[in-house]
Image (cartoon, rainbow, N blue to C red; front, side, top):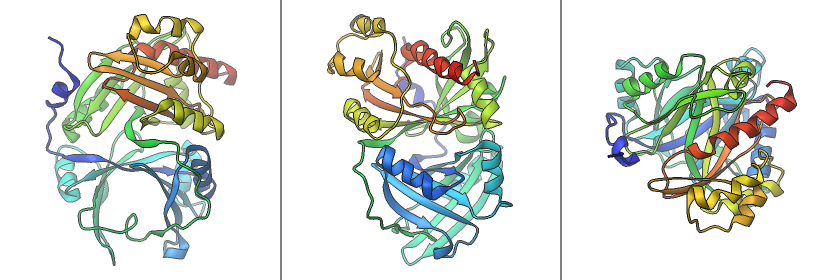
Length: 375
C-alpha cells in the first residue's frame, strides 16, 4: 500500500524540531536596489534595516515581509568583505536558509555532533526588546542553515535592526509562506547531500525522481525531496544527469559557479489573482505549455475548482496526487545570471511537487537556455 506524505514524514528523526522558515537571506551587490525590486515586483513590505546608521559598519541589510515570508537582502560596504567575494563569485544569490527553532543552541549541538560543519557558533543577541539566540551550520555549497530562537525576543526582527519606515509600500501579491526551497548540487552529489540531511538534520526522503522520470529530448536530472518531522521544512535536492545537451542544472552550476539554491517556492491561496498581480508589476514567467496540455488536463488531473481559461491564459500548470491537486507556475530567473527563480504554488490537498508537469516545465526552461545560447 502506498504511503501518504504524512506517513513518510513520520519516519523522520525529530531530534531537531523546526517551526518553519524564519527568513531567507540573499547576498547581493546592491541591497537598497534589490529591496526596491522585491517591493515593486513581488509586493513585499518594508520591515527592518541594519547598517551604518544602526552601528553596523561593514554591511547593510534590508528586511522585507509578506505573509509569513521574510527576505533579508544584504550587501557589503567594502570590496574586500567576504560578502563581496560571495557576490563576485556567485552573483546575487541565497546565502542563508534560516530555520525557526525552539532551542538554537540545542539545534547546533545536535547537528554538529552528527557531522554538521559549524558556520556560526552559538550567539546571544540582546536589546531592549529581549534576547535572540542563533547558531548555524553549512549545508550544500556555501549555503547555510541558521537556527533562530525567538521565544524571548519581541522586537521588529532581531537586535541590531531598527524598524524600516517607508512611504513606498505597494500592495502585497497574496504570497503567504515558503512552501519549499530547492538546491542544485554537482554530479553524483545528490545522494551524499540526502544522506547529510538524514544524518545531520534528521530529515527523511519523502519523494524521489530519476532521469527516466525527469527528462526531455535533450536533457535530464535527478531529484530527491527531504522533509523534517512535521513537514514544515522541505528541501528538494537536484543533480544533473546525462543527456544529449546541457541540462538546466548544469547551466545553473556553471553560472552560479558552485552548488546553491535554485528556486524558492512561495504559497498563495489564489494563484490566478497572484500571478495576474505579479505580471502587472513586471514579473516574467516561463512560457506557457502547448495548447494540448490544457486539452488533456481534465483527463490527466480530474475535476478541479478553477476555470481552465485563466489557467491557459496565464500558463499555470496543474498536477495531482492521491491527496488532491496543486497549481504552480515558475518565474524566469530574477538575476542576469540564469540562476535563481521563484515558484508560485497553490495546494488543493496535494502534497507532491508537480511530477506530471516536469516535462512541460523543463521544455520551457530549455527554450530559455536556447535563447541564451547555453543549451
